[in-house]
Image 1 (cartoon, rainbow, N blue to C red):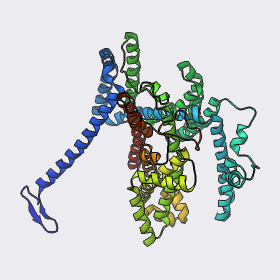
Image 2: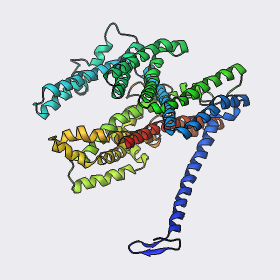
Image 3: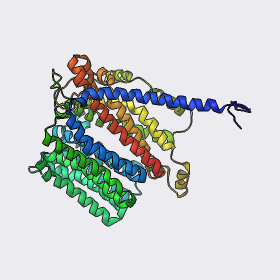
Image 4: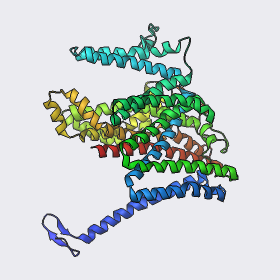
Amino acid sequence: MATERGQVIESFGTVNKTVGTLFQYVLLAATLFGLVTLGILLVFVANDAIQPLTADPGWHLTFFVTLVVPTLLVGGFLYVRHSNALTFGATSVGLFVVSLMFSGGVAMVFVDMLSPVTWFGFLLALAIPLAGVVGIERAGRRLPFSAKLVVTTLLFYVPLFGLPGPVGAVAGVPTLVPSVVDLFSSLPVLPVDWVLLSLSLGGIVGVAVGAYARRLGGNRAGVVGGVAALGIVALSAVVGPLAGVTPVPATVLASVAVVPTLAYLVGGAAARPDDRAGLLVPVVMVGGAFLGAFVVEAAGFSGPASWVDWQFLTSAHSRTAVDAGLYPAIGGSILLMVTVAILAFPLGVGAAVYLEEYAPNNRFTRFIDVNISNLAGVPSVVYGLLGLGVFVTYLGQPTGTVAIGGATLGLLILPIVIISSREAIRSVPNDQRQASYGMGATKWQTVRRVVLPRAFPGILTGTILALGRAIGETAPLIMIGAPSVIFSLPTEFSAKASAMPLQVFAWASLFASDDFYTKAVPAGVVVLVSVLLAMNSIAIVLRNKYQTDH
């Protein structure tokens, strides 16, 4: 048995409990040092951007009494009496805050970048081939795989692109059959934008809420939940203008933030009666915030002179730091991340599935494994040079566009997506595969119905973390010639686009002055870090839920 002075054990050498304890505390100290250092840095940046000390003392006192103290009291009581209820309440607040941030980005897309008419036509163009694929699977089980592949490809290609589509455009052939998007957009009479968004976004949210309610309470609860969600989204377009929000942003806000949070609260309270006390957390926080705002307004207390305000989030760049904003860069980052996800997710997951489930264990696959691991550690500026050489120089594409920037960033995170997806697929127990084979399933059926559903949460977590890295990259965008400053939002993938880190870099270099250093740069960093934390929080929640369920 090991002692304080040490004891020699065969195959282990000298075992010393004191050394092990010392090593444990050294690791703890190193971890705390890193966290404290990072926290101090973020506090300094947030202080420059938000400037909380510029508020009146009465403002601080009001919110301390109405918001901070009640929240701490309720949180402490639940932590002592029922920690699960505290987790439920805190999660609901976090869900609303994160979804509120993303609803702002989605609203930006539909207000200034993508017409709701085009969006609805695109959904119709996807719904038609999906219905056709379901029909083929049910009626054509004896069709060979090659025939199914050809028919499925045509079913998706024609509604989305028409005939001959992009292939014919390259060859100079005129359009013979327009796409569903063009046909829908050319209709003489169309519903207003908020109706289209209510039917599309509200329909998607209604289906998701209905499936969640059905899982908790049966078919009747699913129908009631789905109809209620759709009704709330439609009603928001009428109620929103009364609160100063136009119908389109109000519809997006209800679809992305309000309805999912309400569904989580109602579903959690119904499924876990013991955790209903956690509802006190959002009630106290929301009520305290509104009460504090009312008292501050009535008393005339001035709040912090924050640089992260509505003007900063909705304005374009200016030569003066007071008027500078991040709006076009936020829109550019959104389009870039959409492009990256479209390109990297299917390629990365497909490569991971092949390498884990189909590829033989030989020298070639081991060579691929080593190179994928090496590519994950290559500096980002190298991928910028690769994008410049391949897409711009060799293929002759214009510099700095959304498509080229998204493709370059997609190459950057592709090895990370492959590695994380392979780890998620590898974590699926092999016994489940063998059980599927024992039931007579084929390799493809096993992968589709057993492996991928089990591995999907891990795959999605890794992809979100990879997107978090891509949204903070600057060097690849500089190498492909992305503009540091733009004054309007990009409205298509062939338009030039900047991004949040590139805009912050421009403020710190091209417009290097005391005002930009102490005002615009910290505000831009706070917005960028907030988006990264929101994305990482989603990944953490998915990972924890996956670990709890399995």
